[in-house]
Image (tube, rainbow, N blue to C red; front, side, top):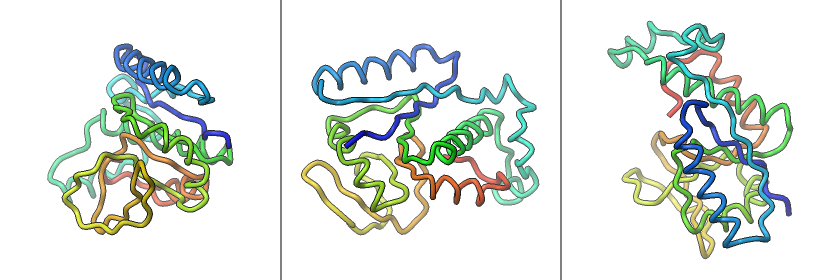
Length: 184
């Protein structure tokens, strides 16, 4: 059962974060040599250095300001564009992927998630990877010895890590024809 490809979104200038992720993956593979990981560092869009990025044209500043009383920063737009480009990659590959931001902390149970990721992708088109202790209301959908799949009833904002299928990548791309809110 092959593990889906892992995309780590990383600004080329964030060398320390890349090293932090490298260390975590090395430790994971040392503890679990049977793991066959395919990891790609995906070059993040640097909003302040690329203020004219083509995806920023999707930003509806008026709607965001009306709803939130402020404008999205170039960094927030860069974050959005980075995730959007990874969604396109997922769609192009036609395979489920795991997306991690470069500040993710991989917990001990991450290995069990990896081992079950393909099966999970068949049942759920999208899964957030997040530690417990959310204050929002939720119901438990599935439980394994190592982690829980829960459905939350309010918006859940966190893009540190997620499992994504091509079907959901397509839905996200269609839905986010216009950028109004930050991706995370």
